[in-house]
View: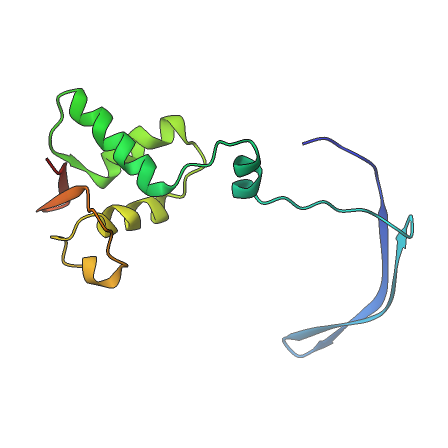
Length: 133
């Protein structure tokens, strides 16, 4: 990330303690310089602008395909995640594993997720999956 400039925020107020409770009363604040420009870009938006955004289902399918091509026909969500994180290091682990369940209609928790038009994983039980033929 590039550093564009510096600014200072001065806050005036007091902290009041009443027993175990603390409260903060602000009387004023000042920003120097008086105008600062902040440009916020979310990571997905930045990736989309570069044409590199990949959905989690695409990541899971890609990882499952790669593991299958390497001879591993049965795998766990953790193994899929470990494979996907090599290429997509910022993917959220909990979201990833949730999407694995959403791609597997045989999973008992599948009913809690929006169904896919074409599910691509088959849940085999005890945390194991395989790519649908």
